[in-house]
Amino acid sequence: MSYYESVFIARQDISSTQVEQLIEQFAEIVATGGGEVKKREYWGLRSLAYRIKKNRKGHYVLFNLDAPAAAVSEMERLMRLNEDILRYLTVKVDALEEGPSVMMQAKSDRDRGRRGDRDRGDRERGDRDRDRGDRGDRDRGDRGDRRPRDGDRAEQGE
Image (cartoon, rainbow, N blue to C red):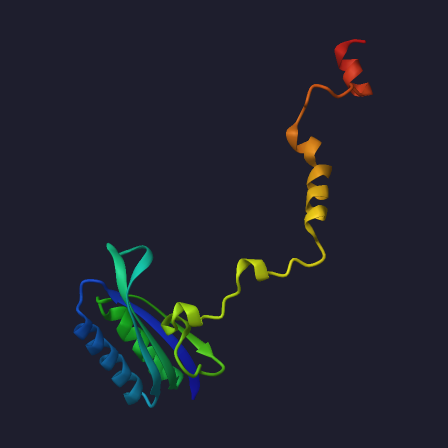
């Protein structure tokens, strides 16, 4: 059997108990297909990046599955038919993650570096300023105080 991660978004106007019923329904479908749901996470009611079917929010749920492809495709087929599901995405992975997902971790526990910790390579501040100065005249256009070139004299009639 293969490992999968599946996330689906349910409509905002259904209750949490209805979301739990959907979770149980899809877990049962995977189990009848010969698979197993290793982990379930309810991420809560979250804002969507853009409107989907007149919804601005949605209930997010994550499944970690150890199931055959037929069970996963049956689950996806039923998600497509269910009007309470706005979107779903299932991805095949090499191994399932242990512990809580990134979405469930506290913000302070996440492994994020601060802006000052970035590696800037060999470039230092002086190099950036020098590079900016090299292109300065080209970016500003005609400054009016430059001397005319040979082509400019021919246009002026000299």
